[in-house]
Image (cartoon, helix red, strand yellow):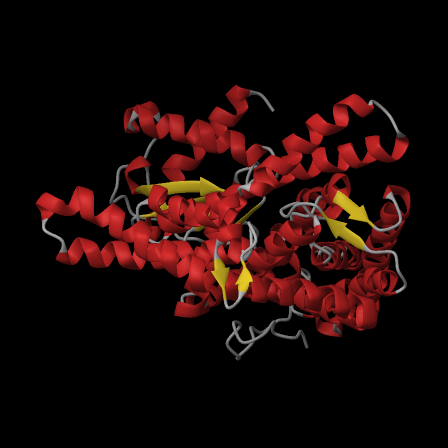
Length: 501
């Protein structure tokens, strides 16, 4: 896709979200453009979802447009350039206060209407304090994902060179490149934490830097010397949160004339001492427990654990709870070089793809759903599942459950292989589906690891397809022209996916 195409996408988005003046801030992760809007009511959702570049829309505390890997970063850059240039640079930019056209679904029919109802209900439910906190913590780690991916792929390439004995002179350089970021990741976490929670970012980074400083080995706590890096990203998160609290307290009590000297000093000193003599030890124990538990779980109950994790991941994504796993993934990568959980959770996407294929073949008269599947399935194969979730399986009800069944069996397959000694992990977080292949790493070499991961995807596809084909439809769904029940469900759609009759 050319720069002109990305610029055109950005220009088409701005007026549909209420104009440049309605965008308070923007960011992006692997696949989504996240817009914080001053007035979400100005969004013209039906037109926004109709844009060919928009694979899906997630309405949360931020308005999220699913654009796909690669595209989202380029559109983000073009959008920032347009906003910096001013509203006049955006053709057709709607002024703030322009009435919204609503946020209706991008396809017609009862199934799409139910999808819109589900999204609205989920948005209300996702506003709870606990979920808001999880999203803010996730926002600390999301900006780190590109570096995790890049360094993870370089680490995998380096391992391949070591195993094959090729270009040995290049190995130390690649080791330094791939390991340098991970050795300082605590500093970046501290910086982002302070920024996200309203503190001075550089002070959060300064306090977190204590964790990776080599000289902490001379500090003794409870009769034991600390180790550089002890506590990892969890310790950095706690240290920066404490720094934010201390800084805010100083701002309230320190006279303005002394603020520039006293506030940074007190913030770094108090938070730094607490980090050295409490947080590093406590976070280190928690991090070690997470790593030990993940290893034990997959070694002794991998099949059962994979079954449960694969089954639950789509509902977790739907409710926003999957964001709680980001610090756990990062901790495992920091400790073990890879996270063994992500390849198992990725099987949920495989179940969703198999489910979508069955829906496409069974609902032959449902033109809107089939059009959605045709446009969303390639992205689903690469791990971008939101268009299929919100456009297909959730509105139909039963197929969402059968997609979870596919994810469960795919996860059980990968978990069983882990239990039998062929571990499969990912050196970074973010990608899923076939896009995860360059990042996989295991105990038996790349070929065996790839075979297990591919086998899990195939099991997920086939099980999701079969479960949906045989159990995903009622007679009413197959009889209706659009594949949806004739009557809307009476229960709150946020409670659970409403089963089709």
